[in-house]
Image (cartoon, rainbow, N blue to C red; front, side):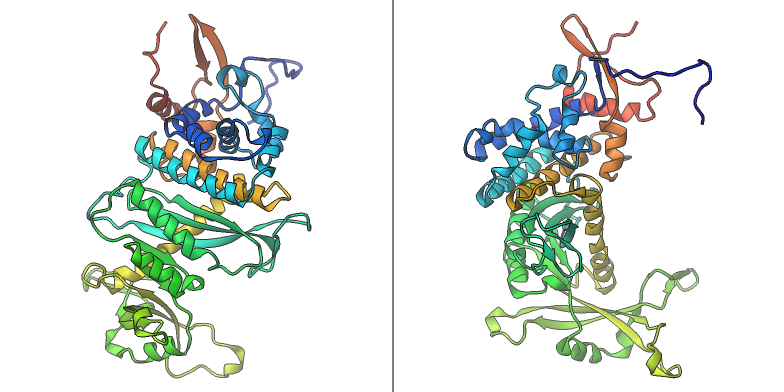
Length: 469
Protein backbone atom coordinates (compact mmCIF):
# COMPACT_ATOMS: atom_id res chain seq x y z
CA UNK A 1 0.00 0.00 0.00
CA UNK A 2 1.36 3.42 -0.93
CA UNK A 3 0.20 6.99 -1.17
CA UNK A 4 -1.75 7.73 -4.34
CA UNK A 5 0.09 9.77 -6.98
CA UNK A 6 -3.02 10.52 -9.04
CA UNK A 7 -2.93 14.12 -7.94
CA UNK A 8 0.12 16.27 -7.56
CA UNK A 9 -0.46 17.43 -3.98
CA UNK A 10 -2.48 16.57 -0.90
CA UNK A 11 -3.72 19.08 1.67
CA UNK A 12 -5.67 18.76 4.93
CA UNK A 13 -8.08 21.20 6.56
CA UNK A 14 -10.03 20.70 9.78
CA UNK A 15 -13.23 22.45 8.74
CA UNK A 16 -16.00 19.83 8.37
CA UNK A 17 -18.76 20.35 10.99
CA UNK A 18 -20.78 17.26 10.03
CA UNK A 19 -18.16 14.56 10.58
CA UNK A 20 -17.78 12.36 13.66
CA UNK A 21 -14.99 9.89 14.36
CA UNK A 22 -16.94 7.51 16.60
CA UNK A 23 -20.38 6.90 15.13
CA UNK A 24 -20.61 3.65 17.08
CA UNK A 25 -21.28 5.72 20.20
CA UNK A 26 -24.83 6.27 18.91
CA UNK A 27 -26.04 2.66 19.40
CA UNK A 28 -23.67 2.19 22.35
CA UNK A 29 -25.07 5.08 24.37
CA UNK A 30 -28.62 4.17 23.37
CA UNK A 31 -27.93 0.78 24.95
CA UNK A 32 -26.55 2.52 28.04
CA UNK A 33 -29.69 4.66 28.19
CA UNK A 34 -31.91 1.57 27.95
CA UNK A 35 -29.95 -0.02 30.80
CA UNK A 36 -30.62 3.09 32.91
CA UNK A 37 -27.10 4.53 33.25
CA UNK A 38 -28.03 8.20 33.50
CA UNK A 39 -31.07 7.66 35.71
CA UNK A 40 -29.14 5.39 38.07
CA UNK A 41 -26.35 7.93 38.48
CA UNK A 42 -28.81 10.76 39.07
CA UNK A 43 -30.67 8.80 41.75
CA UNK A 44 -27.69 7.29 43.61
CA UNK A 45 -24.88 9.86 43.42
CA UNK A 46 -24.86 12.75 45.89
CA UNK A 47 -21.57 14.48 45.01
CA UNK A 48 -21.75 17.92 46.68
CA UNK A 49 -21.61 21.47 45.25
CA UNK A 50 -22.18 22.48 41.67
CA UNK A 51 -19.42 20.07 40.58
CA UNK A 52 -21.75 17.17 41.37
CA UNK A 53 -24.71 18.61 39.44
CA UNK A 54 -26.10 16.57 36.55
CA UNK A 55 -24.22 13.50 37.75
CA UNK A 56 -25.97 11.25 35.23
CA UNK A 57 -24.78 13.25 32.23
CA UNK A 58 -21.24 13.44 33.59
CA UNK A 59 -21.04 9.72 34.32
CA UNK A 60 -22.40 8.95 30.84
CA UNK A 61 -19.84 11.34 29.31
CA UNK A 62 -16.91 9.61 31.00
CA UNK A 63 -18.20 6.14 30.08
CA UNK A 64 -18.72 7.22 26.46
CA UNK A 65 -15.24 8.70 26.27
CA UNK A 66 -13.70 5.52 27.66
CA UNK A 67 -15.66 3.40 25.19
CA UNK A 68 -14.27 5.56 22.38
CA UNK A 69 -10.69 5.09 23.58
CA UNK A 70 -10.05 7.80 26.18
CA UNK A 71 -7.62 6.81 28.93
CA UNK A 72 -7.16 10.23 30.57
CA UNK A 73 -9.23 13.27 31.47
CA UNK A 74 -7.80 15.27 28.58
CA UNK A 75 -8.87 12.57 26.12
CA UNK A 76 -12.50 13.30 26.96
CA UNK A 77 -12.21 16.16 24.49
CA UNK A 78 -12.91 13.66 21.70
CA UNK A 79 -16.60 13.92 22.64
CA UNK A 80 -16.74 17.56 21.50
CA UNK A 81 -15.62 17.51 17.86
CA UNK A 82 -17.34 17.94 14.50
CA UNK A 83 -20.96 16.86 14.48
CA UNK A 84 -20.98 15.33 17.97
CA UNK A 85 -23.21 18.14 19.39
CA UNK A 86 -25.84 17.20 16.79
CA UNK A 87 -25.87 13.59 18.02
CA UNK A 88 -25.44 14.09 21.77
CA UNK A 89 -26.31 16.66 24.40
CA UNK A 90 -24.54 17.18 27.70
CA UNK A 91 -21.03 16.20 26.57
CA UNK A 92 -19.05 18.06 29.21
CA UNK A 93 -15.61 19.58 28.80
CA UNK A 94 -12.64 17.60 30.18
CA UNK A 95 -12.02 20.24 32.86
CA UNK A 96 -15.60 19.87 34.13
CA UNK A 97 -15.35 16.09 34.24
CA UNK A 98 -12.04 16.32 36.07
CA UNK A 99 -13.56 18.61 38.70
CA UNK A 100 -16.47 16.20 39.06
CA UNK A 101 -14.17 13.22 39.76
CA UNK A 102 -11.97 15.17 42.17
CA UNK A 103 -15.07 15.99 44.25
CA UNK A 104 -15.59 12.30 45.08
CA UNK A 105 -15.11 10.97 48.59
CA UNK A 106 -15.02 7.30 49.60
CA UNK A 107 -18.79 7.24 50.17
CA UNK A 108 -19.43 8.57 46.68
CA UNK A 109 -17.25 5.80 45.23
CA UNK A 110 -19.42 3.26 47.04
CA UNK A 111 -22.49 4.97 45.58
CA UNK A 112 -20.90 4.60 42.15
CA UNK A 113 -20.32 0.90 42.91
CA UNK A 114 -24.08 0.58 43.44
CA UNK A 115 -24.67 2.31 40.09
CA UNK A 116 -22.26 -0.09 38.36
CA UNK A 117 -23.99 -3.15 39.85
CA UNK A 118 -27.45 -2.00 38.79
CA UNK A 119 -26.17 -0.89 35.39
CA UNK A 120 -24.75 -4.36 34.81
CA UNK A 121 -28.13 -5.87 35.67
CA UNK A 122 -29.78 -3.54 33.15
CA UNK A 123 -27.28 -4.50 30.45
CA UNK A 124 -27.95 -8.18 31.11
CA UNK A 125 -31.66 -7.57 30.53
CA UNK A 126 -31.03 -5.95 27.13
CA UNK A 127 -28.30 -8.26 25.78
CA UNK A 128 -26.77 -11.72 26.06
CA UNK A 129 -24.08 -10.38 28.35
CA UNK A 130 -24.34 -13.30 30.76
CA UNK A 131 -25.70 -15.95 28.41
CA UNK A 132 -25.92 -19.34 30.07
CA UNK A 133 -26.38 -17.99 33.60
CA UNK A 134 -29.72 -19.77 33.92
CA UNK A 135 -28.54 -23.03 32.35
CA UNK A 136 -29.26 -25.78 34.93
CA UNK A 137 -26.40 -27.87 33.54
CA UNK A 138 -23.90 -25.01 33.46
CA UNK A 139 -21.55 -23.77 36.15
CA UNK A 140 -21.31 -20.06 36.94
CA UNK A 141 -17.63 -19.26 37.52
CA UNK A 142 -16.63 -16.28 39.65
CA UNK A 143 -12.97 -15.28 39.72
CA UNK A 144 -11.30 -12.84 42.08
CA UNK A 145 -7.79 -11.44 41.75
CA UNK A 146 -5.87 -8.20 42.06
CA UNK A 147 -3.46 -6.34 39.81
CA UNK A 148 -1.05 -3.45 40.20
CA UNK A 149 -1.70 -0.37 38.05
CA UNK A 150 1.66 1.31 37.66
CA UNK A 151 2.01 5.02 38.44
CA UNK A 152 5.00 7.33 38.36
CA UNK A 153 6.09 9.95 40.86
CA UNK A 154 4.89 10.68 44.38
CA UNK A 155 1.79 12.78 43.60
CA UNK A 156 -0.67 9.85 43.56
CA UNK A 157 -2.41 9.38 46.88
CA UNK A 158 -2.08 5.83 48.16
CA UNK A 159 0.58 4.73 45.68
CA UNK A 160 3.29 2.43 46.95
CA UNK A 161 5.43 -0.59 46.26
CA UNK A 162 3.50 -3.83 46.58
CA UNK A 163 4.29 -7.48 45.88
CA UNK A 164 5.19 -6.72 42.24
CA UNK A 165 8.04 -4.39 43.19
CA UNK A 166 6.70 -1.48 41.13
CA UNK A 167 5.04 1.71 42.36
CA UNK A 168 1.31 1.69 41.77
CA UNK A 169 -2.20 1.33 43.11
CA UNK A 170 -3.88 -2.04 43.67
CA UNK A 171 -7.11 -2.88 41.84
CA UNK A 172 -9.14 -5.84 43.09
CA UNK A 173 -11.61 -7.28 40.56
CA UNK A 174 -14.27 -10.00 40.53
CA UNK A 175 -15.54 -11.44 37.25
CA UNK A 176 -18.31 -13.83 36.32
CA UNK A 177 -18.02 -16.29 33.42
CA UNK A 178 -20.26 -18.94 31.93
CA UNK A 179 -19.67 -21.55 29.26
CA UNK A 180 -21.46 -19.34 26.72
CA UNK A 181 -20.27 -15.86 27.72
CA UNK A 182 -16.95 -14.09 28.15
CA UNK A 183 -15.94 -12.62 31.55
CA UNK A 184 -17.96 -9.69 32.87
CA UNK A 185 -16.80 -7.62 35.84
CA UNK A 186 -19.20 -7.81 38.79
CA UNK A 187 -17.07 -6.19 41.48
CA UNK A 188 -14.15 -3.79 41.77
CA UNK A 189 -12.20 -1.97 44.44
CA UNK A 190 -9.14 0.31 44.30
CA UNK A 191 -6.70 0.01 47.19
CA UNK A 192 -3.36 1.49 48.16
CA UNK A 193 -0.41 0.01 46.34
CA UNK A 194 1.28 -1.61 49.35
CA UNK A 195 -1.76 -3.52 50.64
CA UNK A 196 -2.02 -7.30 50.68
CA UNK A 197 -3.99 -9.05 47.99
CA UNK A 198 -6.71 -10.30 50.34
CA UNK A 199 -7.47 -6.94 51.93
CA UNK A 200 -11.17 -6.20 51.44
CA UNK A 201 -11.72 -9.47 49.56
CA UNK A 202 -14.44 -10.60 51.96
CA UNK A 203 -16.61 -7.57 51.22
CA UNK A 204 -15.94 -7.78 47.48
CA UNK A 205 -16.88 -11.47 47.36
CA UNK A 206 -20.16 -10.74 49.17
CA UNK A 207 -20.97 -7.86 46.80
CA UNK A 208 -20.02 -9.88 43.71
CA UNK A 209 -22.17 -12.87 44.66
CA UNK A 210 -25.08 -10.57 45.46
CA UNK A 211 -24.75 -9.01 42.00
CA UNK A 212 -24.58 -12.44 40.35
CA UNK A 213 -27.78 -13.43 42.11
CA UNK A 214 -29.48 -10.34 40.69
CA UNK A 215 -28.29 -11.08 37.16
CA UNK A 216 -30.39 -14.22 36.86
CA UNK A 217 -31.44 -17.42 38.54
CA UNK A 218 -28.81 -20.15 38.48
CA UNK A 219 -31.07 -22.97 39.66
CA UNK A 220 -28.63 -25.66 38.62
CA UNK A 221 -25.11 -26.05 39.96
CA UNK A 222 -23.82 -23.79 42.72
CA UNK A 223 -21.60 -20.90 41.58
CA UNK A 224 -17.88 -21.60 41.92
CA UNK A 225 -15.50 -18.97 43.32
CA UNK A 226 -11.93 -19.40 42.06
CA UNK A 227 -8.91 -17.64 43.53
CA UNK A 228 -5.17 -18.02 44.06
CA UNK A 229 -3.39 -18.72 47.33
CA UNK A 230 -3.38 -15.06 48.43
CA UNK A 231 -7.14 -15.37 49.05
CA UNK A 232 -6.98 -18.58 51.07
CA UNK A 233 -8.45 -17.26 54.31
CA UNK A 234 -11.37 -18.28 56.43
CA UNK A 235 -13.20 -14.96 56.10
CA UNK A 236 -13.24 -15.03 52.29
CA UNK A 237 -14.06 -18.73 51.95
CA UNK A 238 -16.82 -18.77 54.58
CA UNK A 239 -18.38 -15.66 53.06
CA UNK A 240 -18.59 -17.39 49.68
CA UNK A 241 -20.02 -20.59 51.16
CA UNK A 242 -22.62 -18.72 53.22
CA UNK A 243 -23.67 -16.89 50.04
CA UNK A 244 -24.40 -20.22 48.36
CA UNK A 245 -21.21 -20.75 46.35
CA UNK A 246 -18.51 -23.41 46.23
CA UNK A 247 -14.84 -22.45 46.33
CA UNK A 248 -11.70 -23.51 44.48
CA UNK A 249 -8.65 -21.84 46.00
CA UNK A 250 -4.95 -22.52 45.48
CA UNK A 251 -2.98 -23.53 48.58
CA UNK A 252 0.55 -22.72 49.65
CA UNK A 253 2.68 -25.80 50.25
CA UNK A 254 2.94 -25.44 54.01
CA UNK A 255 3.65 -28.29 56.43
CA UNK A 256 0.01 -29.40 56.67
CA UNK A 257 -0.45 -29.51 52.89
CA UNK A 258 2.86 -31.33 52.33
CA UNK A 259 1.89 -33.92 54.90
CA UNK A 260 -1.46 -34.45 53.18
CA UNK A 261 0.21 -34.82 49.78
CA UNK A 262 2.65 -37.39 51.17
CA UNK A 263 -0.29 -39.53 52.31
CA UNK A 264 -1.66 -39.95 48.76
CA UNK A 265 -1.28 -43.49 47.48
CA UNK A 266 0.83 -43.89 44.35
CA UNK A 267 -2.02 -45.75 42.63
CA UNK A 268 -4.33 -42.75 43.09
CA UNK A 269 -2.54 -40.58 40.52
CA UNK A 270 -4.25 -40.22 37.13
CA UNK A 271 -2.66 -38.86 33.96
CA UNK A 272 -4.30 -35.68 32.65
CA UNK A 273 -4.32 -33.63 29.49
CA UNK A 274 -1.60 -31.01 29.89
CA UNK A 275 0.56 -28.76 27.74
CA UNK A 276 2.64 -31.58 26.26
CA UNK A 277 -0.04 -34.29 26.33
CA UNK A 278 -0.61 -36.68 23.41
CA UNK A 279 -3.88 -38.55 22.98
CA UNK A 280 -3.44 -42.31 22.45
CA UNK A 281 -6.41 -43.54 20.42
CA UNK A 282 -5.96 -47.33 20.99
CA UNK A 283 -6.11 -46.93 24.77
CA UNK A 284 -8.27 -43.80 24.82
CA UNK A 285 -5.89 -42.16 27.31
CA UNK A 286 -3.71 -39.09 27.43
CA UNK A 287 0.04 -39.67 27.47
CA UNK A 288 1.34 -36.86 29.64
CA UNK A 289 3.86 -36.11 32.36
CA UNK A 290 1.23 -34.39 34.50
CA UNK A 291 -0.85 -36.36 36.99
CA UNK A 292 -3.59 -35.47 39.43
CA UNK A 293 -5.01 -37.01 42.60
CA UNK A 294 -7.19 -35.98 45.54
CA UNK A 295 -7.86 -36.75 49.20
CA UNK A 296 -10.36 -35.39 51.75
CA UNK A 297 -9.09 -32.24 53.44
CA UNK A 298 -10.33 -29.92 56.16
CA UNK A 299 -9.38 -26.28 55.81
CA UNK A 300 -8.35 -24.28 58.88
CA UNK A 301 -8.01 -27.43 60.97
CA UNK A 302 -6.16 -25.49 63.70
CA UNK A 303 -9.27 -23.39 64.39
CA UNK A 304 -12.20 -24.47 66.52
CA UNK A 305 -14.38 -27.13 64.96
CA UNK A 306 -17.21 -24.77 64.07
CA UNK A 307 -14.76 -22.67 62.02
CA UNK A 308 -13.32 -25.58 60.03
CA UNK A 309 -14.38 -26.13 56.41
CA UNK A 310 -14.44 -29.71 55.04
CA UNK A 311 -13.64 -30.28 51.39
CA UNK A 312 -11.21 -31.87 48.95
CA UNK A 313 -7.49 -31.39 48.42
CA UNK A 314 -6.71 -31.81 44.72
CA UNK A 315 -3.05 -32.04 43.78
CA UNK A 316 -1.38 -31.84 40.37
CA UNK A 317 2.20 -33.07 40.07
CA UNK A 318 4.68 -32.45 37.27
CA UNK A 319 8.21 -33.86 36.92
CA UNK A 320 10.83 -31.33 37.97
CA UNK A 321 13.01 -31.15 34.85
CA UNK A 322 15.07 -28.23 36.13
CA UNK A 323 16.82 -29.39 39.32
CA UNK A 324 18.90 -26.89 41.23
CA UNK A 325 22.59 -26.68 40.44
CA UNK A 326 23.64 -27.70 43.96
CA UNK A 327 21.82 -31.03 43.75
CA UNK A 328 24.72 -32.69 41.94
CA UNK A 329 24.07 -35.61 39.61
CA UNK A 330 20.64 -36.59 38.33
CA UNK A 331 18.39 -38.44 40.77
CA UNK A 332 17.49 -42.07 40.24
CA UNK A 333 13.79 -41.45 40.91
CA UNK A 334 11.56 -38.78 39.45
CA UNK A 335 11.24 -35.63 41.54
CA UNK A 336 7.95 -33.80 41.35
CA UNK A 337 6.64 -30.26 41.59
CA UNK A 338 3.25 -30.12 43.30
CA UNK A 339 0.36 -27.67 42.79
CA UNK A 340 -2.48 -28.04 45.28
CA UNK A 341 -5.86 -26.39 45.67
CA UNK A 342 -8.79 -26.72 48.05
CA UNK A 343 -12.34 -27.09 46.78
CA UNK A 344 -15.78 -27.69 48.27
CA UNK A 345 -17.33 -28.98 45.04
CA UNK A 346 -19.25 -32.27 45.06
CA UNK A 347 -17.10 -35.17 43.74
CA UNK A 348 -20.21 -36.65 42.14
CA UNK A 349 -20.70 -33.50 40.05
CA UNK A 350 -17.07 -32.56 39.40
CA UNK A 351 -14.50 -35.36 39.46
CA UNK A 352 -10.80 -34.89 40.14
CA UNK A 353 -9.71 -34.29 36.55
CA UNK A 354 -12.58 -31.92 35.80
CA UNK A 355 -12.01 -29.97 39.01
CA UNK A 356 -8.31 -29.53 38.17
CA UNK A 357 -9.03 -28.38 34.63
CA UNK A 358 -11.72 -25.98 35.84
CA UNK A 359 -9.42 -24.49 38.47
CA UNK A 360 -6.62 -23.88 35.96
CA UNK A 361 -8.97 -21.73 33.90
CA UNK A 362 -8.94 -19.20 36.74
CA UNK A 363 -6.18 -17.53 34.72
CA UNK A 364 -8.90 -16.07 32.46
CA UNK A 365 -9.14 -13.10 34.84
CA UNK A 366 -5.63 -12.06 33.76
CA UNK A 367 -7.09 -11.37 30.32
CA UNK A 368 -9.54 -8.94 31.92
CA UNK A 369 -6.69 -7.19 33.72
CA UNK A 370 -4.77 -6.87 30.46
CA UNK A 371 -7.88 -5.64 28.62
CA UNK A 372 -8.51 -2.86 31.14
CA UNK A 373 -4.86 -1.78 31.14
CA UNK A 374 -4.96 -1.67 27.36
CA UNK A 375 -7.91 0.74 27.47
CA UNK A 376 -9.24 3.04 30.20
CA UNK A 377 -6.84 1.83 32.91
CA UNK A 378 -3.73 2.66 30.93
CA UNK A 379 -3.48 5.55 33.42
CA UNK A 380 -4.99 6.61 36.72
CA UNK A 381 -5.46 10.26 35.80
CA UNK A 382 -5.78 12.06 39.14
CA UNK A 383 -3.59 12.71 42.14
CA UNK A 384 -6.57 12.09 44.44
CA UNK A 385 -7.21 8.53 45.50
CA UNK A 386 -11.04 8.79 45.50
CA UNK A 387 -11.02 10.23 41.96
CA UNK A 388 -8.92 7.29 40.75
CA UNK A 389 -11.21 4.86 42.59
CA UNK A 390 -14.17 6.40 40.75
CA UNK A 391 -12.20 6.18 37.49
CA UNK A 392 -11.80 2.42 38.05
CA UNK A 393 -15.56 1.95 38.54
CA UNK A 394 -16.30 3.98 35.40
CA UNK A 395 -13.74 1.93 33.45
CA UNK A 396 -15.54 -1.23 34.56
CA UNK A 397 -18.88 0.17 33.39
CA UNK A 398 -17.34 1.03 30.00
CA UNK A 399 -15.87 -2.48 29.78
CA UNK A 400 -19.24 -4.13 30.49
CA UNK A 401 -21.04 -1.77 28.09
CA UNK A 402 -18.77 -2.58 25.15
CA UNK A 403 -19.01 -6.29 25.93
CA UNK A 404 -22.82 -6.09 26.04
CA UNK A 405 -22.89 -4.24 22.70
CA UNK A 406 -20.68 -6.90 21.12
CA UNK A 407 -23.06 -9.69 22.15
CA UNK A 408 -25.84 -8.00 20.16
CA UNK A 409 -23.87 -8.46 16.93
CA UNK A 410 -23.68 -12.24 17.12
CA UNK A 411 -21.08 -14.77 18.30
CA UNK A 412 -18.14 -13.38 16.30
CA UNK A 413 -17.46 -10.49 18.70
CA UNK A 414 -19.09 -11.90 21.84
CA UNK A 415 -15.70 -12.81 23.33
CA UNK A 416 -13.57 -10.14 21.65
CA UNK A 417 -11.33 -7.71 23.52
CA UNK A 418 -12.30 -4.10 24.08
CA UNK A 419 -9.76 -2.96 21.49
CA UNK A 420 -11.34 -5.18 18.83
CA UNK A 421 -14.87 -4.08 19.71
CA UNK A 422 -13.82 -0.43 19.62
CA UNK A 423 -12.08 -0.79 16.26
CA UNK A 424 -14.97 -2.58 14.56
CA UNK A 425 -18.06 -1.05 16.18
CA UNK A 426 -17.26 2.22 17.94
CA UNK A 427 -14.60 4.26 16.16
CA UNK A 428 -16.38 4.26 12.82
CA UNK A 429 -16.28 7.64 11.03
CA UNK A 430 -19.54 9.04 9.72
CA UNK A 431 -20.95 12.14 8.04
CA UNK A 432 -24.22 13.53 9.38
CA UNK A 433 -26.96 14.61 6.99
CA UNK A 434 -30.43 15.99 7.77
CA UNK A 435 -33.53 15.33 5.70
CA UNK A 436 -37.20 15.62 6.71
CA UNK A 437 -36.23 16.21 10.34
CA UNK A 438 -34.27 12.96 10.39
CA UNK A 439 -30.55 12.56 11.00
CA UNK A 440 -28.81 10.06 8.75
CA UNK A 441 -25.33 8.72 9.40
CA UNK A 442 -23.36 8.10 6.21
CA UNK A 443 -20.69 5.55 7.07
CA UNK A 444 -17.74 4.34 4.96
CA UNK A 445 -18.57 2.27 1.91
CA UNK A 446 -17.40 -1.35 2.13
CA UNK A 447 -16.75 -1.17 5.88
CA UNK A 448 -15.53 -4.72 6.70
CA UNK A 449 -17.80 -5.03 9.74
CA UNK A 450 -20.86 -3.34 8.22
CA UNK A 451 -23.28 -6.17 9.01
CA UNK A 452 -22.24 -6.36 12.67
CA UNK A 453 -22.51 -2.59 13.08
CA UNK A 454 -25.94 -2.64 11.45
CA UNK A 455 -27.08 -5.45 13.77
CA UNK A 456 -26.02 -3.39 16.79
CA UNK A 457 -27.69 -0.26 15.47
CA UNK A 458 -30.91 -2.11 14.70
CA UNK A 459 -30.99 -3.84 18.09
CA UNK A 460 -30.52 -0.63 20.06
CA UNK A 461 -31.95 2.21 17.99
CA UNK A 462 -34.69 0.34 16.06
CA UNK A 463 -34.64 2.77 13.12
CA UNK A 464 -37.33 2.99 10.44
CA UNK A 465 -36.96 0.87 7.33
CA UNK A 466 -34.07 2.11 5.26
CA UNK A 467 -34.97 4.09 2.15
CA UNK A 468 -33.38 2.83 -1.06
CA UNK A 469 -32.82 5.03 -4.08
